[in-house]
Image 1 (cartoon, rainbow, N blue to C red):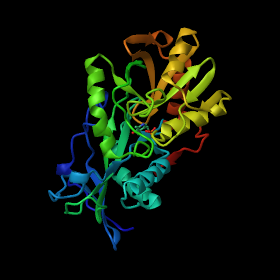
Image 2: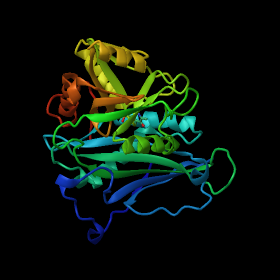
Image 3: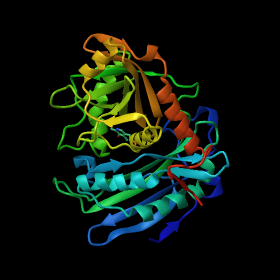
Length: 356
Ligand SMILES: *Cc1c(COP(=O)(O)O)cnc(C)c1O
C-alpha cells in the first residue's frame, strides 16, 4: 500500500497540551491516517495528512443505517523513551471480525499496522511521558456510499486518529460504584454485542445516565434473556475473585472479547491461580458476599486497564466489595500490565510492538 504523506506546516502544528491535565479523549494530534474503499477497487488513496474535518454526503449510509465500527488501543512511551504499541494485531484482527459482522470491508492488518506506525512516527511527540499517560489510538470505519436503502454500502472510509490521555487514576486507584441494571440490556446472543460497532454504545447511554443520576459510575449488564448471568461492566469485561477462584464470564456471543481480558487471563494463569471462564450469576455473587467469600471484583479494558469495583447496587440492596478498597489481585494485575506496557520489565508475553 502506498501512503501519500502531507505534513502540517510548522505554523499549523498545535501547541502540546499540559501533560498533568490531559483528561480522556478531548485532544487530538496533528495528523491522521485515512483510506478509502470502493467495491471492485478495494482500498485506495491511503494518506497521512493534517487532522481535519471530513466532507460527507448527507446520505452517507453510516449516518442512517449505522455501519460504523471502531477500535481502541494505546501507544506507550517506555522508561527507555521508546514507543511501543500494546498487542496492536489483536485489535486489528478484532476490527475485521467486527467488519465481517457488519458486512463492511476487510482491512489488511499488516498494512494498517504499517500505516499506524508511520502516523505514530510523524506524531511521536504526542506520546506523552508523564507517569500513567499514553497515546490513545482510535481506528474507525464508516459507510460513505451516498444512498438510502438498507444494504451494505459499497464505499467506506477508514481512519485513525490519536489522542493523548492522562492516567486514569492519577491519585492511585479509585474503586468504582456499580449499578446492576435489570431494566436495560446491552446485548443478546445472535446480535452484535461481541463486536465493536458504534450503535452498541448509543444503546447503552440511557442506562449509564440513570446509573449516574443514582450516584453510580457504571452499569453492570446482565444477560438479556434471564437477567441473571453477568456479562460486562460499562464498556469493560468483568472479573471476580470468589474463595480463591478467579472467574470471568465466557465469550458466549454477547460479550466483547477484550484484549485486556485475554491478557488478564494469560497473566493470572501464568501465576498459577485457579482461573475459570464460566457463567456466573448475580445471585452467586450476592451469596458469596453473604458467606464472606467475595474477595474482589474488577473491570478490564484498554482505557482504565484495570478498574476495581468497590460497591454493587442491585434491587434496592447495596454491597461493599473488599471494604470499598482495591483488592490485591487487581493491584497486582495492574502493576504487571503497567510494567510490561512501559517496559519496566521484559516483555515476557511478547505483547509489545516497537515503533522502530
Ligand atoms: C472495548 C470493550 C471492552 C474492552 O476491550 P479491550 O480490548 O480490553 O479494550 C469490553 N467491553 C466492551 C463492550 C467494549 O466495547
